[in-house]
Every structure is written in structure tokens, then in C-alpha cells.
Image (tube, rainbow, N blue to C red):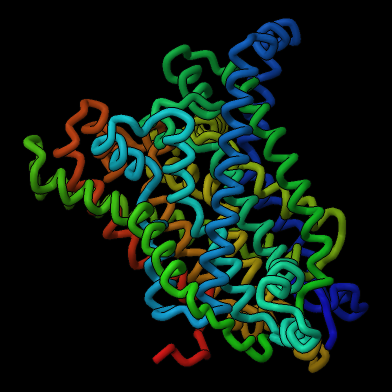
Length: 526
């Protein structure tokens, strides 16, 4: 069996290197330069504070507290989501668990509940849920599907040969799990953990609901209440350094992917391990996870819709906010996906330092708080594109910058499934590179493009912080209307907007699950 990296064809091929379009690197670098422009804004603002002010600010005891809160929360949630995501994926893909297809859908549906809506659900029902442990609970329930999906996809497409060899050598299910299956899923685990960690660094709404202070909430406070852009930018630089560390750690894991990945498409499926007497405990654990991650938010929304004394259903307001949300989310999703294609293609075709740096730089903005991205867009619009100020294009640009890493991840994963040698074969027949891209490569990655649109649309439709600053005057989305009501503790009035956000997120989540995992060729348990 031949092993290779899932990153695509042999990128050292002289033919591929010779025929690669010269325009592609320029286009990829230009896209990433725009996406990474908030980093320049943060650097400019931080430089204005001067070295003396920076020392005073970063030397305050509060900074140590913020760093401790941010790092310990990220560590705890990342470990918890990794354990839950891998455990759930293993039960679905490698055991004879009853109702695997149903569990796959149920376990990924928590992605449809925005983090600040989940925080609202717990806080409005249980006043004791707040602070560090409340944040760990809420964010773990929100983010474990980001680990579950890539791990399940890896296990579903992997060859059974290694696991069968381990069993033939007398290794039991537990030994096979830790010595074969877990190393096989290590790249997917690392990628999912990176997304979870970066998401936590920039999250604001849920932490504000839970009254837990991190760097992102402190940055928001400095920008909105203190009007101190320089100090806020210094705090944001700390988040960028943490993000650089996380990306570097994930890159170290990525270099080992070639030793575990299988060349080509999916092989034979592994025979499912029999749970036996562990069937009921496994079902009980998954039931508890779904009830906590999905049941509590749905119950809270139903409760406040029915019981809340402030519940009103202003149909015109809700419909207008829903249409506005859909329009902006779709525009951002389409733009981000189109922009991700040249960056993903460049990183897939070229195994060069510039290609790797370009790809990884695009992920850094995911650690920036939404307000930092929003203010950077305002900064550049006022100075270089004043006609776009307070226009819909500003909000779409903010969404694209914030969620470009999600689109890039989906497109990159789709390119990894393209059979090696396809582009070389087409080019050897005299087909021009642009025609190869349009007629061969893009049709093969269309499912991945659909997943990218779903991922960006899902997150953009519930984005809060940047929307509050970038929306045109008088524009209201579901998220901003929800925030207005919850800020006044009008939980009943906020419930219709939250419920509609969840309902609109379900189709993208189902599409994302189907595109990511693909068909399950195993027969369901009878």
C-alpha cells in the first residue's frame, strides 16, 4: 500500500511545476493580503501607543488574569471537544452502534445554535451557569462538532487494512483503537482542535452572556467603552501571538500526515467493533451529550416563546431581519468561497515555503475579535474607499475576512480528494491550465465548494460583534435584534429571533454534514 500526503498530487512533478499558471501565486497572495489586512491595522494602532505605554499596559496584573483565563479556557475546551469529538466519531464509524445515521445528524446539529444563543439559553434557565465553568460547558457543547466532522470523515474514508493487521496479530479492540485508529485520525484531530482554539480566541458574545472575561471581551471593552484603539490593539496582538503558536503546532502535525494517509480514494471499510454489553452505556453517553448540547437550547427557546411574558411576534420585523440576514450571509459565503479557491489551489499545487506561508497566514484572522476586524474595515474604508463607508459592501467584507478560514478549510479538504495525476493527465493532452481548472478540477471539488458556502453562510448568519459596527444605518439582522432584546433582559422578545436563527442554520448544517462525511456504505444495524 502506497502512502502519501492527502494534500493532492505529486507537487514536485516537473510537468506540474512547469505548467502551473504564473497568475495563481499573485492571485493567492493578493487575496491573503486583503484577508490579513486587519493585522496591519492592529499593528498600526498598537505602534501609536509607544513602547512605554505598551510596557505599562502589558505589565498590569489584569493582563496576567486575562492571559490565564484565555489560555486555560482554550486548553480545557480544546481537550474536552477533542475527547468528545473523537469518541463520538469512533462510535459512529467504527462500532455496531444502533442508529448510526440518526446519531450522525443529531450530534452535528448543535452547530446550528450560535454560541451567544446557547449562552442565552443556559443563563436564562440556570442562573448558576456563568464564569469559567459555565464558559467551558457552553463552548464545549458548541464546538465539539468541529472535531467530530473531520475525524468521522477520516475514519469513513480510511482503509481497513492497518486495523485488520493489528487484529490478526492478536491486538484487542482497545489496543487497536490507541495504536492504529487514533494515529490515523491524528491529522483530523489536530485540524479540528486548531479551529476550536482559534474560535475561542476571538469569541465575544457567549462570554459576555456568561460574564467571563477574556482578551476578546477586554478588547471589546477598550474599543467600545474606553475608545482606546491603541490599548485594544496591544491586547489584540497578544491574541495574534497565541494564534501563531497554535498554527505552528498544527503545522508540526501536518508534516506527519503523509505517514498515516492512504494514497487515492477510500479503501475497504473496517469491520465494526462489537459493543456488546457496552451498547447501553454508549447510547446513554450520546443521549446525554445531545440532550446537553441541543436539548437545553431548544427547550429554552420553546419555553420563552410560550411562557415569556415579553414574547411578541412582530411578523414584519422578524421577516425583514430574516431576509436581511440571508442576503448578507449568502453574499459573504459566495465571495469567501470564490476567494478561497486560488489560495487553496496554490497551496495544493505548490509545496513551497511561500505557498505554505500564504495558506497559514489566512488562518490568523480567525483569532481576531470581531470588533478588531470591523474597525479595520472602517479604517481602510474611510481612508481608501470612502464611497463604500456605511454601505452593504462593508459588512460583506467584514464577514469575508472573519470567515475566510472556514471557506479555505473546506476547499482545501475537497482538493485533497482529487485523484492524483488528474491535472497532469489533462495537461499532457494539450489542454490549457485554465481549461483544466474549469473542466476538470472545479467539477471534482464542487461538493467542497458547497460545504464552504454552507460553513460561511452558517456562521455569517449569526455573527454579532462585527455586525453591530459595520451594518448600514437602520439595518437590523436577526443577531442584532436578538442582542438588543437580551441586553434589556427581555428574553421572551428575543426568543423569536433566536429560534429563527437556529431554524435557518439547520439546512446548512445538514448539507455540511453530508458533504463532509459522504455516503455511508455500511448497512445499518438491523
